[in-house]
Amino acid sequence: GDVSTLEATVRVPMNIALVKYWGKRDEQLIIPLNDSISLTVDRLRAETTVRMIQGAGEHAVISTTNFPVAAGLASSAAGFAAIALAIQRILNLDDVQANRLARIGSGSACRSMFGGLVQWEKGEKADGSDCVAKRIGTETWPDLYCVILVFDDGRKKVGSSEGMRRTAQTSTLLQSRIEKVVPQRIEEIKTAFAAKDFAALARVIMADSNQFHAVCLDTSPPIRYLNDASWHLIELVEKFNENEIRAAYTFDAGPNACVLLEATSDVEELSDLADIIRPLTACGGDRSLSYLQCV
Ligand code: PMV
Image (cartoon, rainbow, N blue to C red):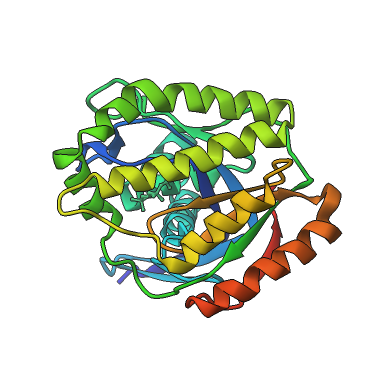
């Protein structure tokens, strides 16, 4: 018969949430309870080949990433965004359709389809038609770097879907976070990014990471994603920032850290960070240190 093969290979970067998405308004359509905002990390990529065999009623997806999968490093995000972009190419979908496709795979994936600072708007409509990710401005911040610290590359204990469901059902903190905290923080991130105000950006990033993990603890049964190495890093960065805020940590649904810093003082910063790594190794972290340009 008429069996033809269409193939597309794309490489898509991961994104790191600066204000976290946690909780779904619609589990089928993957509509979030709150807006979130992220930064695309250019050098951590998922490569995906999608092969469609027309007429044979099947398709194949081959996906690889250069970073740990399901360890709370938003790797599924880059993977699903890559699948969506490959399908977009094969089927000539428009950007909104492709964005929706990525979102269905993994919510945060819809933020990986753009570079720079990206906001995922929850929208208001029941059908999710106004639930889209958008790049904020055209600004880049070439001096902004991120260091990824892999403390555990195993799979996460509680997957994000299960964790979100549990938190939405049991946490009393979540509602006030969504209503009173997140909208203001998104604006603060945008303002700080536009002004390249690192200290202001860092304050919001760390506060939001901490609140996300507090909301996880406020879940029944409680969810604990951070381990001793994560906590050690938090304490070291806080100490490192005592006189001037020069680094910001953030953690997703796992113990691995993303530390953001500016390259202006990178020699000094990096050697200080190297000192940070050693004690971490003592509490179960490994040496994985990559110094990556964000945008
Ligand atoms: O996209 P999901 O379903 O894996 O959820 C991601 C949730 C966090 O990474 C914890 C936060 C975020 O906004 O990426």
